Image (cartoon, rainbow, N blue to C red; front, side, top):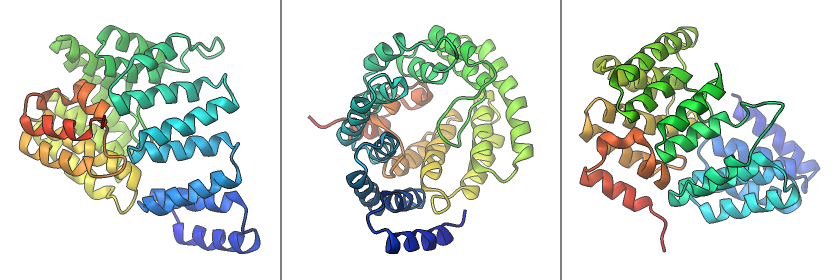
Length: 306
């Protein structure tokens, strides 16, 4: 993406329309993608000052606060957005999800999804329900959510997981190793095609690495993880790059490389968008590290301060 060219265009807008919130908003998005978090936050906060009733803008700055683990500010922005449109189910679910990341509390999200229905699109909240089932460690609920997902993928931003990977994870959580391996094998066939179509796309390759880790293909998984990190460094994309750092830590954990996993995870949690207390405490992805004092210390470092 031509961020320099975009900045030049935005500078012209700022000169001609110094109070136009869009210039601050666009600058904030570019800064965020480039990892200039302080500048991004200032620009987005300035945009909100000029356009306080813009729900999309409130949601976007809430996303930034989430990445920065400033959850009280995130909650406040989402509450403002909800006050402008109380029937916005997506924002209500996002507000409830904040409690998962912040306090490792899935109950508000459980309640929000229990009442969320869209008769015109029954699978609308399926990906949210997959997330909730992971947080609640609920294999049956997870499988139901995956059924509702159909052939769609799930996951954040650039990291879109095939449904079969979810089937493998929930089957493993249930203790059904054979079904888990079958799910991972199906996921590999799907993801390999994605990688073949985009061989230099780090997120797709990293997901393949996670699948290979689930299949016990350790050498393949580690090679794919390392190559994915080369393809999407933080300097290229601060948000997806940070998620990739965390996913590589997960691959190390799944392949028994605990020392490398802990070191990578220590790096991850120092980054904006690099992981949350709720995810590490609740999600089964991190079970291979549970009981390791170093992992427990990382989790404790992210716990909300009383």
